[in-house]
Image (cartoon, rainbow, N blue to C red; front, side, top):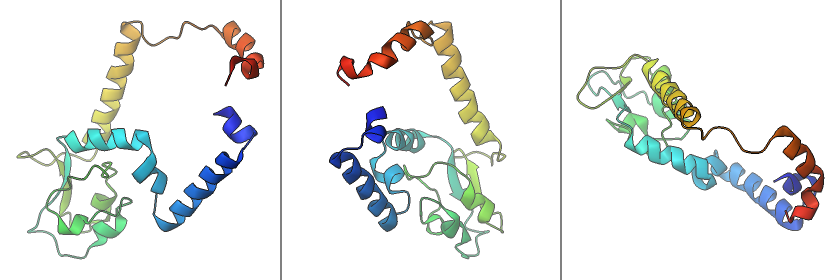
Length: 158
């Protein structure tokens, strides 16, 4: 990855120019269509029990929620957002002046806005704690190992 930016080849420049052009045509092109981490988040989002839900009775059809969505999802046209592109950022909920949108599990009461980020942070913390408790968190390489390997990076075949 270091050489990708320090010694750019024709392929490097082609990739960067392609990404810039795609970003001009599609908002967040890398994140929405090409990023493997984005794909993983999309899978997790798809199976999440917490979804953005719209109370049809309280919605006035102003479409401010759809305009505020960074993923350009048609929030105003759906009762429940079931898209892998929805990251749960709550921008649509914030934009709704009529409180017609909320984040909630199915068949349950509305969750306060802090619940979704608290759950995400809790899952992350639990994963880190599990990794540390089982001994899978630390690397076997020491700082001195890195100090010896970094100057020899060109001879290692990277």
